[in-house]
Image 1 (cartoon, helix red, strand yellow):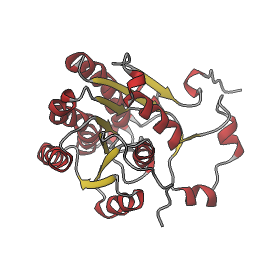
Image 2: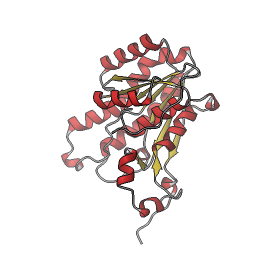
Image 3: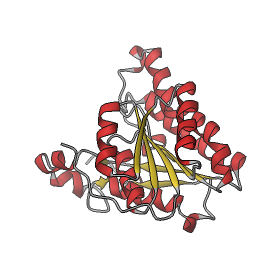
Length: 258
């Protein structure tokens, strides 16, 4: 069963495209934007779940299947959005091969490396490329979902770390290329408990998981969604080319083994 809050109605006609939105952070962002009155187009590889969550989210949610690493699918998907709604005001690039861990570097398969970079880095570039003309027409905004792993690592995470580091560089490059009409920013989440609410209740995190964070808890999808929504809003009109870290303070915490 998919459990979500009921969003409010669309009040001002703005349209956002959110990738990787069938679950987790992407779904949380989509739900938050709908609650603020956006029409949201959700995309994902998972057709079945994507269609179900769009139905739960209500009339201001619409789902299309898309592999963001396939330029033909991106072009057709963007054209479908424009055909359906006639405009595009925001792009949120969240789709990713999200497992940060590969096997050891010596055993890392090149096909896996290429797929991670294709989805996590080439995908946002392709989406920006095909969405830019329509975003420009409405002084739109792009938010890329990067990661704190762009700046720090655990072992055996080369593909994911490289893709997210590249995404930060792509973000400021796009901000310069597409400005002033289009603003482009990145959000880098830390540990976010992105599981479905029913799973979080059934299998709560340990007290130690929360206590290690300077903010006193592990993050939620709503923490990330609130930041994304602000960056897409007119209140962030002077903000572009920036990275916003949403990690409960963990990347500022000095940690030594005792």
